[in-house]
Length: 121
Image (cartoon, rainbow, N blue to C red; front, top):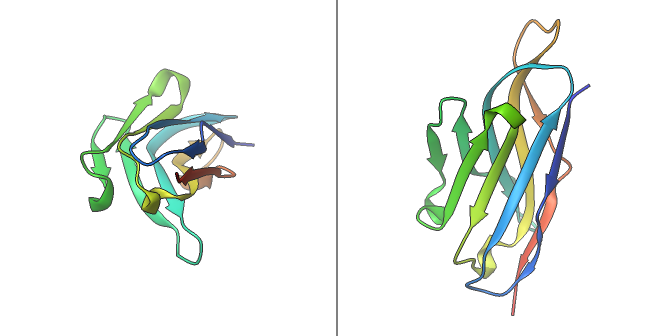
């Protein structure tokens, strides 16, 4: 089975920084895209940023210039450096990976359990 384990969430003041990590483990053959999504209270889950195995990145407009996504393919790990945090960045952040497992015929999405990020003074 595949597991995505996130870490790095917490409480931070506006203007502060946090770094999230997500490590994928299990019988993984290949990972295409890894990314971060977030869900604020009462809202739908939305894409924050994602990155391909080749390093191409994509960011949601509200986080451009403040967040940086990176990836270590050898470790099957994706990171999200979040700077200049705002109260509207508060939410549960979920890691996502589009991958293929051993003996699997196709790629599918896997999700982490989520980590809480709270930006408040």
